[in-house]
View (tube, rainbow, N blue to C red):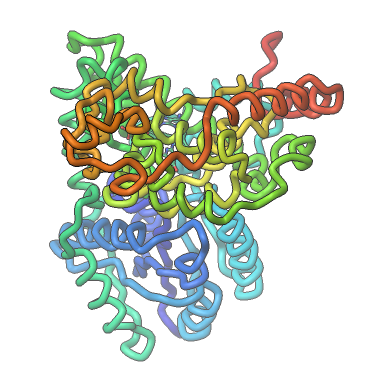
Length: 488
Ligand SMILES: Cc1cc2nc3c(=O)[nH]c(=O)nc-3n(C[C@H](O)[C@H](O)[C@H](O)COP(=O)(O)OP(=O)(O)OC[C@H]3O[C@@H](n4cnc5c(N)ncnc54)[C@H](O)[C@@H]3O)c2cc1C
């Protein structure tokens, strides 16, 4: 009789602490196959980029350094989940698959439905555990706050790694070349945040002990937010830390903090994190469908050269260009600047949000589908329930980068200009062109649109639709589905 084994399937939960599926699997006392699968269909998806998979590889390397001490490791495979699982199920007697629930792309949602069918055919149980304060099958938003608080207050679920019973696949099923390749990726040099539970714990600790004073003011600033923001987003998105670990650490730090208000502002964002993922859990179509169908009638024309200028950071608006070039190189941008990029694309260029959402998903190291698609639709105004915000990139620059430090760092063509001209290079006169050795339209592109005119057009169109009876009717349905009933 073949030995019965259990499998722990790691997804966006790349940590060894507060990991209920791993804890339960260890307690099952069976030999465990710990596995991460790099899926070609996901890697080829228009929302994915190599930077994400390198972050995953770094996270696995970090976990394996710890697991090594216990004679265990996470086995790396590459291939489609269904075909790899099928091969494993044919060769081994698998009792249970342990994993976290995933609220991800439409692609992973469909894949998980196929996995469920396959497990059923092989008579294998699937123990899927809640990962965030996100409730699967939530009937009404009225009970969400209570359930969220309960989840965040529960004891952390640390597996006893000493008790893991190691299990390795037969050589013919292993993929040593794949493992070597991803281990190589995990040692690459790059200018982005490093994946892994160890880095995540350091970032959390430095934020709670040193970096948080001034948080509320600084997170809107493109430069200062890079050190004053918590910088936990990528670690949360890939599960190097659980939301519960972060919230409980915040609660512990709060009483002794001299900057409690900043930790309260941070707390709100941790609530938003799960709030938005819950929305995608309840409505996975948000990835590709306007939340409010009334907005299907707008932005139906495409302008590839405008889109290309936005993607490449050559729109002629210095802050827009600086933000895009920065996120492309570093994988990070603060909330306000992300909003401005989306506003520029959807309001000033009047282009559909979906192509932009793909492009920025590739750039954001912290790509988290639930937050990303909700924020895109909110900024694009396609929910019909949120305030219409059309950012003026020049005002944003003056408010949040008054000395043009960020602009000059990322748009070096403007480095020799004084701050005011680096913010509005179209105001350079002939004498200044000579003085600063700068030729407008040659050294730096002319503006591709006039934001005063585009503001007027977008504002008129969006308000016209928002005020319509049809938009209001759909907005009510959305509000009922995604917000709490204040009467309860
Ligand atoms: C168009 C657009 C797309 C976005 N896409 C993503 C994404 O793919 N992944 C992602 O993590 N964040 C996304 N955000 C939200 C936000 O910009 C980032 O979470 C934040 O900039 C990360 O900085 P930080 O790690 O310093 O977090 P902090 O600002 O310190 O916040 C703490 C944590 O709270 C969560 N959080 C912060 N702001 C928000 C928010 N507005 N909504 C929901 N959760 C929030 C994040 O997990 C974050 O790490 C997006 C925002 C916009 C406008």
